[in-house]
Structure formats: C-alpha cells, structure tokens
Image (cartoon, rainbow, N blue to C red):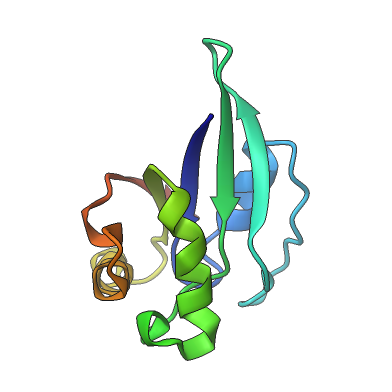
Length: 122
C-alpha cells in the first residue's frame, strides 16, 4: 500500500481535497484549524492499487519545534512516500511553499528530501 501525505498551511484546502478524492469525511469549514487531528482516506488507483492519503492539520511557522503541536503532526508524515503540497494561491504562493518546505526540512527524518507534487487551490 502506498502512502501519501497532504501538507500545507491552515485552510489551504487539504481536507476538501481529501473529501473529494477519497472515502474520508473530514470536517470542512471556512475557518483555519478545522482539522485538529490527522485524517486518513483511501483511494483506488486506476491500476487497482489502494493508496492511503493522510491529511495532517495545517502547519504553522515553528511547527518543527512543536508550535501548534506541529512536531506531532509532522511525525505522521514520516510514513508518507510522497507529499501533496496544497497551496492557497489567493496570497503569495511562493512564500507559502517556502514556509512549509522550511518546516519539513527543520523537522528532519528526511521529510525535506521527500518528493512533492504541488496542488494549487482556490
């Protein structure tokens, strides 16, 4: 089974995307920090493989040091083979991408070197 992880800032649309592509029913609302615990969903790939997708709560600056329980959320990503980096493009997308990338690298455990696909949202 392949494992993927959604990463991004709060309210980027990670839970909405998970709800759309999988069997998961995460809480979705118009305010930040709607997701307070990781949510898993499964997706059937066209070739019949089953994929597991993890939506972790939004990461904030300092997450790698425990701000907002970020180090606990980052620990869930250690099992992910690939990150789907969801970015809300209604603000500076490059800045948002860099902020999360910094936290992944600062956490360690190889998260900064994992392959990423960028998903632009909103």
